[in-house]
Image (cartoon, rainbow, N blue to C red; front, side, top):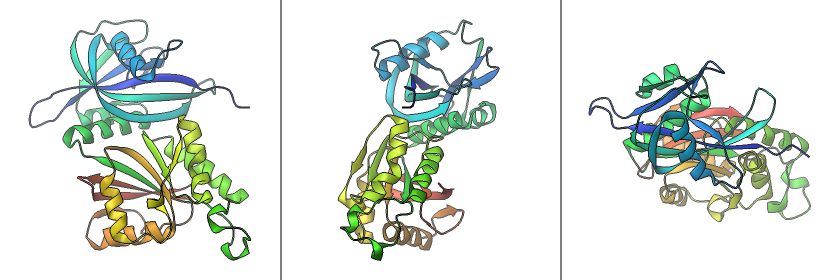
Length: 292
């Protein structure tokens, strides 16, 4: 049985910047690790994640803050090969003043590009990018579109098709997808009712300490108009959708035909991940992240 993760919470702390430069974000330098990161720390016994986020930010930066929304969870291995699960909130700085402490020896207020250049870890940069997108437009949604992994040959499966499971190769692909998605902040995970789709993102849910929610809106043979209606119904967040080729394919083809900016291949093989950005429920950009 794998060891229990280290539970932690933190925040992307921001303040209003100049009108032409956008918000500024507070980064912390930890002398012990010689890195620039976002303020975070382990939960106290019995403490809720959202309360831990406010406490840790105050302790490390000296700033009181107010929550402006949940940004998602990330996981990674520590230097001692322990898994750490961290949930982050977007926090607006109130009053306060930094004083060097046992965890942090200096801080910097920087804009988006400064944060991207200064942060040591890509996972932190993605959190700041997500926070910046939400502050620019509160309707901003990021969708991680996952095609299920290998589930064998449909014609050789004797039971109901929606109960067809992943093969051993498919299970390995699902672990690869979890490694990809662990580098991104995730708020929710949805799946087609088909078992193979559910199993494809189950390891990701385990990593993030959350559940996979099944919805018929991700089932096979969904009409394109219904796909767009479903995307438009998603609230702000960073949301994983596990579904089928005939859901993903028509969507990517149509988005591409509308001259939406897409980067990478225009394919969607099994166990692949597409990342789409939405504003006001409409796809405005996207890129192919790879395969698990």
